[in-house]
Every structure is written in structure tokens, then in C-alpha cells.
Length: 283
Ligand code: CAA
Ligand code: NAD
Image (tube, rainbow, N blue to C red):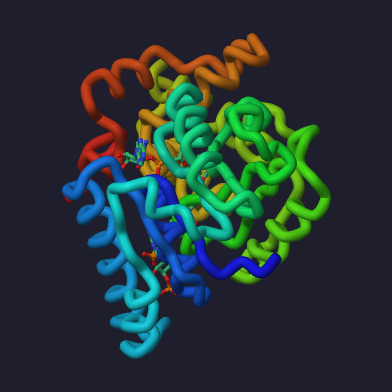
């Protein structure tokens, strides 16, 4: 099946990035948010990113205009009735995701692929809310989606080989490398990355080192592009906590448990870059 029309559910950090990279790659993209205010915020983030790209000479003004021409927003899920592929990128909450999949199954063409960008939740549970579990899989993008070169394709026990092949071709059409991952919490990358991020929070909480020294240690000592605390600020502390909780719930291993400081910072609204304050302050 030729994929031409993409739907993206959620225009937060990931949804806006996914919508941007799809529109830049020539797809017609429809993005959904819960209200007009959040939709405008997400669409503005895409405009800003494209303007930045044009200013830095990465794309031409004509590319920017054409990309924006391929992008539309809506607050009505019924508008997804002509989409070939829908990528869900709402908050990391299984009940909310299941509800979206139930509705999408009724609205979207029978042939459409329904994908989730979940960081760690069981894709099969979302698939079984639909009448087409063979057309449901995880397409896991990395933050920032327009920049990071990987997608993890999460294969459930019910997905068809055709769906996986179409998703792989789609990922590659965005200029990404696709790797395969099991439908097991954290897949491949977060299974390794999340314990690392929360270990850094534990070290900071214990007073072993300052945030700056922890981050500089990993940037200068290991050539990581950013340290683990700055990375947690980029991901969002709320998302990091939800992912850690879900992984702990499944594996019951202490290394996946959210540290007390992470819970306190989330309770205080210090969610990282998205709220202007996390381990660091952002203007
Ligand atoms: N949207 C689009 N482009 C962006 C962007 C964004 N949000 N942020 C940065 N860029 C682009 C810039 O335009 C720039 O492009 P050019 O070099 O071509 O001009 C390039 O990325 C580098 O940006 P900057 O110079 O501003 O900053 P930087 O060199 O410090 O790079 C970074 C920023 C790409 C975020 C880099 O620090 C990095 O790779 N960090 C690690 C990110 C990472 O590990 N992500 C995975 C998170 S975990 C996850 O996603 C999974 C999960 O489920 C939680
Ligand atoms: P976010 O909080 O920035 O954005 C989520 C957006 O979804 C919000 O704007 C919210 O209004 C919207 N939303 C909630 N319910 C909705 C619904 N029913 N319909 C439409 N929109 C709805 O979160 P995020 O960081 O973009 O994460 C989204 C998903 O991507 C999560 O599953 C997360 O685990 C995953 N993910 C996150 C990262 C990351 O680094 N933040 C990386 C990869 C994957």
C-alpha cells in the first residue's frame, strides 16, 4: 500500500517533531490536539523549527513554504478518515492511548496502519483495542525527531510482516535508520538509556556531584552530545518518570524505579525545557 497521508495524534514535543519530519519528507500531514490553543502551540513550534532551518541554510524558503503547505491541524479525530498511516504521540498513559486506538479503528480506513510512538508501553495492548492488530505496531522516534536518525520498529506478536515492511520503508523515506525491537518495556534504546538517566539523578540527589559536573563528565569524558541530566530536561521529567514507572512495574528491578527527587521535581512542575526549569533553567 502506498503511504501518502499521515495523521499525527498529539502536537507536543514529539508529535510536532514527527509531523515536521513527515511534512518535510513530502507527506501530507494532519495533526490533532485536544484544543485549539495546544494545536496552535504545536504548529508554531513547527514553524519556528522550519524558520530556524531556513535561517541556517538547511532548507530553502521554498522548501519551508512547501512543507507548511503539506501540514494541517485539527481538533476533530473524525478528520482522520482518509489517513494511510496514523502515528499516536500523546502522553505516556495506557488508558488514554487505548481510547485513541479504539476511536481510530472506527474512523480510519481498514487498510490504514496505526502506530504508536510510546517509549515503553505494551503495543499489543493498544493493538488489541482494534479490529486490525495485524496493522498496529510501534514506530518509536527519538527526540528531537527531525534530527535523530533512528526509528525503533516495535513488533508485536500479532503484527503482519507486510505492516512491518511498510513501516520500515516509511521510516527510511524520512531519512531514518530502522531497527527492530521486541514489544517489551523500553524496547532496545530506553531499556539501556532510562536506567542511565535515573542513575544520574540518584547520584545528583545523593550529593555525589553537581549537575554540571555529572553532565560535563559524560560530555567530555565519553563524547556524549549532552549529559544525562540535560538529556532528562530535553525528554521531559514527567515523561521520564512515566517511562521509569512503567518499566519498574514490568521488571520490578530497583534500577528502573523513579528516584524520589524525580517525583518531587515532577510534582513541583519542574519538567525540564518544556516548563523552563528542570535540572537547569531555560529562558
Ligand atoms: N528541531 C529541529 N532541529 C533541531 C532541534 C529541534 N528541536 N534541535 C536541534 N536541532 C538541529 C539544529 O538546527 C542543528 O542543525 P544543524 O547543525 O544542521 O544546523 C542541530 O540540530 C544541532 O543543534 P544545536 O547546534 O542547536 O545544538 P546541539 O549541537 O547541542 O545539538 C541535540 C542538539 C541534537 C539535541 C544534541 O545535543 C543531541 O543529539 N542530544 C542527545 C539527544 C538524545 O539523546 N535524544 C534521545 C532522547 S531519548 C528518546 O528520545 C527516547 C524516549 O522515548 C524518551
Ligand atoms: P508531550 O507532553 O510534550 O505531548 C503530548 C501531547 O499530547 C500534549 O500536547 C497533549 O495535549 C496531547 N494529547 C494528550 N491526549 C491527547 C488526545 N487524546 N488527543 C490528542 N492529543 C492529545 O509529550 P511528548 O514528550 O511529546 O511524548 C509523547 C509520546 O512520545 C509519549 O508516549 C512519550 O513516551 C513518547 N516519546 C517521548 C520522547 C521524549 O523525549 N519526550 C521520545 C520518544 C517518545
